[in-house]
Image 1 (cartoon, rainbow, N blue to C red):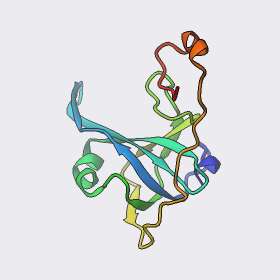
Image 2: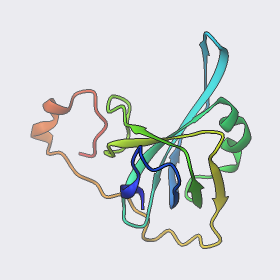
Image 3: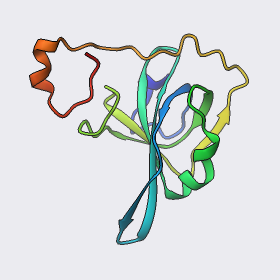
Image 4: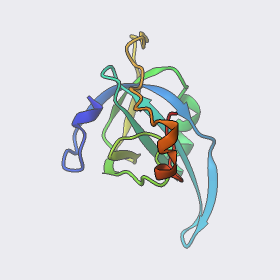
Length: 135
């Protein structure tokens, strides 16, 4: 399950549904032009996590990943989530890299794959400026 992922576990496989997928953005760095895209995934326990995909990975896999479909994701770098940009409440995020494999699940039943929401009362929103939250 997603909740068992941590930076010290390098060999893992999770089954999760793609909740959302961003558009591909291009950027310039000292290494030249690159591409980045992100997505949020959720498992059967309702735990969600953000995923970042970089240049080569975007080119090879982005178009084949569909929102709402269930996949097996294997390997990737688990890093502390940048809470400024995170769209999930997970402490970690996954960076897909050259070791990552993705396989569409034959079982597409995703009825249990719904993110758990932790709502913030409207009167407490001032303490959460700049964050993404359910209200």
